Length: 274
Image 1 (cartoon, rainbow, N blue to C red):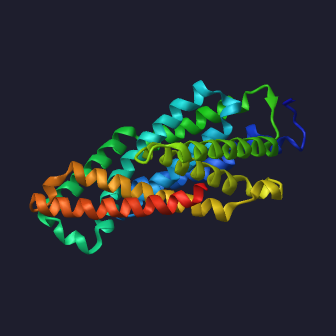
Image 2: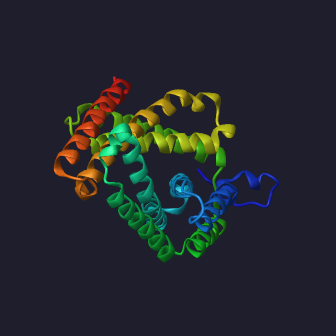
Image 3: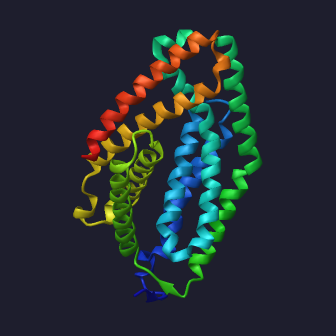
């Protein structure tokens, strides 16, 4: 049972008062990335990672704030992160083609990639992240600080890590029984692994050693399923934009390359489900 709020010297160990300590660095990082979107190509990806980590943090504190308050905030962060990822999706697709990338009509590719970058900038500008993230932080802190009860941070961390671990195990079971082309189930494994890894990175120093187990395996899981997701997304992206190829034969050849890569990566990922 949660403890009533007190003014004791132990008050700083409660989850309600500690949210800002975890959230503020992520908000600062995201805002720094937003101001540098025009200068560094990798900045879009770094912004997306910061937003995803912040989204995981909100999930960790959800039991104290309620789903109705938290999920709209998490949905907003997801939309912003997706916008930031559009440009990188093109970079990954081109990199996956490797030497077969010569089949691309670069004169057609450049405008498409530039359009994706401009759309991302416009979407992020409309989202007004500078004010939205600060308002979100203020609203969450106000709700937490006015809560009449206190929850030990260590307890919250332990319970949420265990919940994330159970969720990942459930997603892996679903992926094992999924049909061969049901990549949505495989993508869920990747997201579950990412959530658990972020939580362990947040709370590792305050968790019992047994709760920190499996980080090496978790990184391998996230890496392999991430590579599979890259192959699936790249194949879909280029199939939707055949106009960037000089002709239909070049498009078919490039898509065949991506299809072979997707199948190879699926086999590698499947080994981790056994």
